[in-house]
Image (cartoon, rainbow, N blue to C red; front, side, top):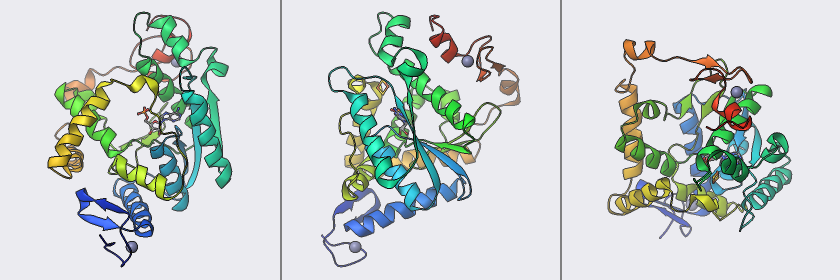
Length: 309
Ligand code: AMP
Ligand code: FES
Ligand code: ZN
Ligand code: ZN
């Protein structure tokens, strides 16, 4: 098969877009697509300082590379979770993120959870969630808190994560199966800033996981192949597998599902009614000052001060 834009042999066939491209044209295409995604939802501008959350995986390193290539002012943050049993997951991914940054002379802030809060993620989970073997919810809470705090303290206009289309479609499927309206309302590519919260964006909201992986491979980015050892058997992976099966029979179903949600949102299908708005109460955490929807301490301060979640 030949590239659609030149006569070279195609390196990738994008069935969902009915397109085959050579290496150079694929890399250029993904750069352009990301730029268009940023512009479509006004995620950020060239003058703003962006902090990109990098895990050492294909999605976040490709995103960092693309934003850098596009000329955005972008630094990275890596959170060392201390998940090192069996495969040395955190050690390996930290090294890859550090190598990526130093090869390109980009600034990477590393937050070591154990050094900052005296326990790593498995230890926090063991102390607070006895009997529950998976640290994923504690881990998610800690990551969100540290990303937000670091971006605010260091004056970034925006925090970018590398959630891709496969992530978004799987999360949307789960939220729809449960009709979790609060979560559905917040599954947008941009969550605006407000006091205590930095603006959060997902520039890869229409990028297939396979496209991000191809970008990393074709541009020679070294990333961690292994998934987090705790993700095995997770509901999100299960939903991703199911969506992949549907996509095999119905190419572009993931894209149509998520873009359909965005259109429904533009038509205010999920908008809050005035009564609902009155029932939302927010407080400021007595310890760290961040916004929380419960009184006294926020969930993160509860976790790190030793109370059960
Ligand atoms: P996850 O919560 O693992 O699905 O990851 C979602 C996004 O969070 C990734 O695309 C990254 O942008 C970011 N992320 C995940 N793990 C880390 C980490 N250890 N340090 C910094 N950012 C991360
Ligand atoms: Fe947090 Fe797996 S990355 S538990
Ligand atoms: Zn070509
Ligand atoms: Zn707090």
